[in-house]
Length: 416
Ligand code: ADP
Image 1 (cartoon, rainbow, N blue to C red):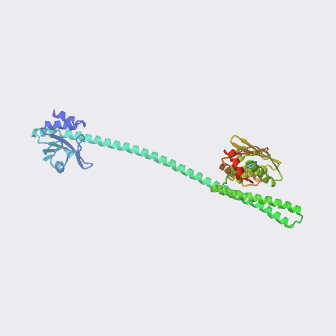
Image 2: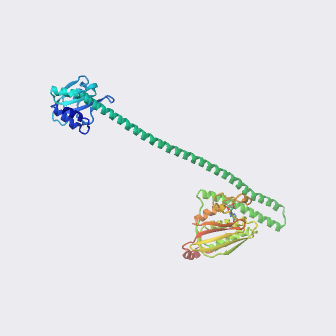
Image 3: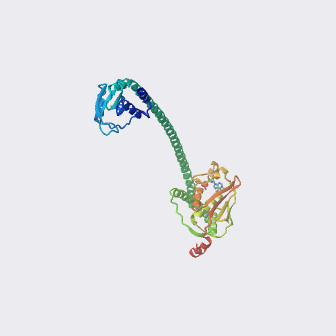
């Protein structure tokens, strides 16, 4: 019976209950087993016993005394007991296990318990070893998980670093490309500015020597042509800076669209004897926008149409109203544009392939045009055939209040 109870101590879940049965068998009120954990240098209740035994200094003293003698006794407070009980403590072999009994057992039973002590000690030592092994296994498992996580983090960091390095490389390349483009642009710009200046200088020298008023008039006109070219180049450069800094100012007002078309054509035609600019259709309607900037848009398309059709004789301008938009087309019979280039026309500094380098220009006109149209909620596109010619279209939304605003316009803008 006693040995059965001892062997039942294997079960941790019922250990405390079973210990009380042993205590009863021994004629005692309590039985608590302590383990002397040498690793942490502490005497603690064995697994299965309440961890919070109300220990005071006397308990500690008893547990200390037990390391000096195999049996010691004292008076102690036991869990769930109203008053202190006399207590007997026994220590197992190697002082690994201590048994505390509430009360004083009979000498015979005490001997019985002493005899069973090696079994109990072996049982708890084995259990402790198993627990230690389990703890080690768990620690190993945890550190495996941790090192796996670490490896994953390091991998992710390595990928991020590689991406950042690649990006840095790409950024560097992009900056270099931009700087090259800028250098190239400065070269072109100085060349483009110098050409009309040289002509003006030469015309001036000739004019100083000429007496014939008719010939003089011819050079005055040629000079004026170069001066306006110079003016356009400089104002394009200033406009790009303004666009870049977001400082392009717009003044919106109502005007007759027909007037915009005919006046712009007239001033371009004035400086262009080589081509005839024909306005095919121009409905009269009131539009709201920046007159000066839209004139600039049309001038750009017309100048390009003339410039890129050196063998052409005509430029056709058409205007039609379609749904909520006005669409203007400018058609030339010139060199045309390859399809792959047509998509890049609104880029800053974009110029056609090297063939076009025989034409003057900074590659800014269409970029500025596209920005002005965007500010008017408009856009442009091109239809072109290489060697046959190009038709540029631009489109602007119609002023919703056109009809009512026409009356205001007439009273507000008399004489415009
Ligand atoms: P630029 O004329 O000063 O080069 P633009 O921005 O006005 O600059 O035009 C950009 C490019 O578009 C030109 O270099 C040219 O290759 C092409 N392009 C523009 N208009 C025409 C046109 N009417 N016919 C053929 N190519 C054109």
